Amino acid sequence: MSEAELLIPLTVRLIERDIGDAAKMIEDLPRRVAADILLLLPVEITTRLLQRLQVSYTASLLEQNDPELVNKIISRLAPRVAASVVMHLSSGARERLMPHVTGALAEEIREMLTYPEGSVGRYMSSNFLTFKKEESAGNVIEKMRKLVAEKSFPASYTYVVDDDNVLLGVLNTRDLMFAEPQQKLDSFMIKNVFSLHCFTDREEAAREMAKRKYFAAPVVDGENRLLGIIKAENMLRGQKEDITRDIQTMFGVGGDERTFSPIGFSLKKRLFWLTVNLATAFLAASVVALFEGIIAQLTILAVFLPVIAGQGGNAGAQSLAVVMRGLVMREIPPQRIRELILKETKLGTLNGAIIGLITALIAWWWSGNYWLGVVIGLGMIINLVIAGLAGSSIPIVMKKFGVDPAQSSSIILTTVTDVMGFLAFLGLAVLFRNLLL
Image (cartoon, rainbow, N blue to C red):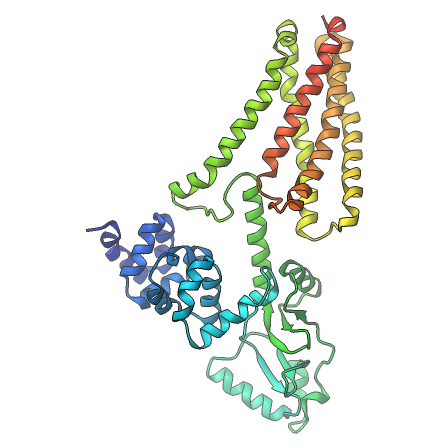
């Protein structure tokens, strides 16, 4: 009996008691075992369970399974959810699946494929209400009451369109309730409607909606035809996911790793970057080894190595954070990149001068040697200048070469600041050897 078969009774009991606990259990299992469990469960139970899992995780579980079975499962999901799952499959898995998908779901997926990755068209919903401009207020109110009674009234604004589905206006509920029963919608609808083009970037859409405090916005095409709506909560949730994924990748953790991901999955995601980090640490150590002669003569130099490394890393991280935010928020036009790098380098110079002076005074007081203060002070200035330059340029260079700028840029930055900081400090110590001994 396989591990998946043994876990089936437990999974069913958990689903009956608390489907949230069942979902957590599935996420904690190795993916192959979790995928096998989904295959062995009745389709109705599998569908309920998948609705509680992250879309990308659901797609990974279905990735290698039989296309006909996958179609049976996803066809029971809400069309938008099912389409999102399909969009998260690899291109090969999608090609195997699509011949088995028919009807409304197939059309929904084809529509989603026409929108760029990250655009609002990929995330819009078709659950909204529209009326024609010539309809009367009384007729519209009657229809709304019927929808409420059937519990199918969408939690969104109500829009007015013409015969070609061109967006004309939005209805204010108060105006609708106080209108004369025979009054036409186009006589009291709000005509200046804020809308988002279907190709608008999701982050830009979230900013615009937050600025206007709208909970939803209509999505239109180039001819202002209403395609769907986008909810602010979905945009903000998407931004949160993007930001957390960027934070994880900045520090060498897979963007798709979750809190309770299986140990094997987490190990696979983290071990590579830890190995890279180890290699860069040895690179920094090799720089120190080049100067072991002067360190043996002046052991106090070793005391200040962590100070140089720590200040350089922190200063670089500050610049990196500002530039990363600018890239995410689309605040850095190409023509101002040089200006930004120059600004961060200047800031590094000013910070270096101030911190370098403070460090020099402390070193002088500590050792009683004026020239040691000069060496550590100059080393700090050089390191913070390099930190500002590296912190601002690394993510921009990575993006220029088509690499995710969030992908472990902190590891690269730490290497640069450690290596250059040690070179500057210990190199100056060699130059001032006679004055330090």
